[in-house]
Amino acid sequence: MTAPAAPATDAAAVAATAARAHTLAELEAGIVACRACPRLVAWREQVARERRAAFATEEYWGAPIPGFGDPAARVLIFGLAPAAHGGNRTGRVFTGDRSGDWLFASLHRTGFANQPTSVHRDDGLRLHDAWIAAAVRCAPPANRPTPGERDTCLPWSVRELELLPAVRLIVCLGGFAWDAALRLRRAAGLETPRPRPRFGHDALFDPGDRLPLLGCFHPSQQNTFTGRLTEPMMDAVFARARERVAR
Image (cartoon, rainbow, N blue to C red; front, side):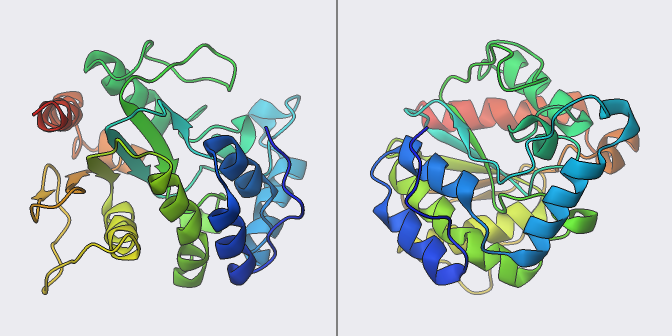
């Protein structure tokens, strides 16, 4: 991983650092070093120090989480933010938590992943035709980033999208990711009609340009334990995503 000259410490520095990244590796280095949001920095590092009892012997990542996957991906999978004891512990988004268990099992069933589990950064997981990232790269308190934190993080996603030129569809895991993806489209110079398209499971926003959105309920325990999101429902979204980008 390429080391940045200095960590970004405010929104302007995030935008400048992201814009200077010429490769995904350079962008990853900038993301991991970022300290632009004091509340998020304090929380992610507090969690990493105190740890959950079940992981007391593990060394937490405790830093922002870069995207990962296939650099030739046609599908970008967009989540909300890393989990405090998931991605913030393991260093890879949707890795080491129940949401990730659901997500990667579905990606494996639909041909986007080589294995159905995601446990740690070096577990052999490989994605095909998919890239996964979070709209906010640090674990937020109560899993609720502020609008300001969301907006500060946006340049990382803008540059990431530019460095993933094959992307033709964004699968949005939940309403927060849907809203962030609409902002990402606007930052990429793409129009969004009024009224804004509404999020829904399997909802498709396709204005006929290069970056349509496809909604999917977030695989949170609140959704999966209650049956609001089932395995067939999630598989159907990713099967539809694969069909659309194959056209």
